[in-house]
Image 1: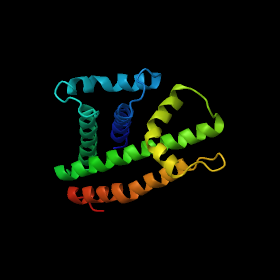
Image 2: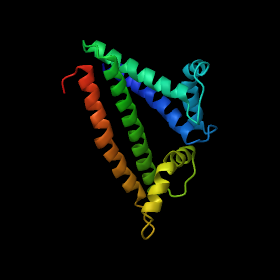
Image 3: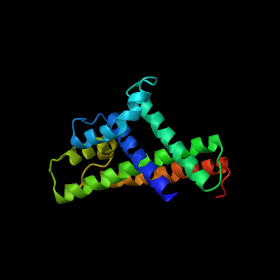
Image 4: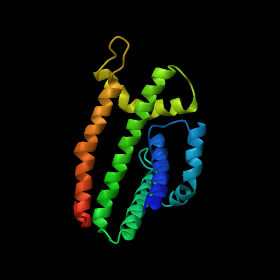
Length: 185
């Protein structure tokens, strides 16, 4: 179960990063972006034949995320000796992907804050992607909570809001998914 979970989780992380970077229109000539595109292009090229993007959202990438997440949960359940219901799998997959998106944002914000302490103003491919990835969520927080004496508290505010999202959205979704799947909580 550990190996299946690890392999699938790493690939889901890469596909989720591709989706998020496309959503925020990050520079895909960045070496890190190129690495992500190289890993995710084969299945997406195939899926895009039938599923076009619409309204700035890469629906093929979302379908790949859900498909791989459902496959992971199904394999882990089968290894554990159970087969969850389809509705339970869908809810668990949605909850897992929302949780992953929140964790990616939290990690990106924390790394960006640490980089701003260690090497403020440094330019490298990682800092550019982190800034692009977190700017859409930090900008409104900076308007709400401007810097005080040169110290930016907006990352703290966003991290609290993201943690609230996990408590108020993800955990109830996971609980509902487990109940629908027939798992004992």
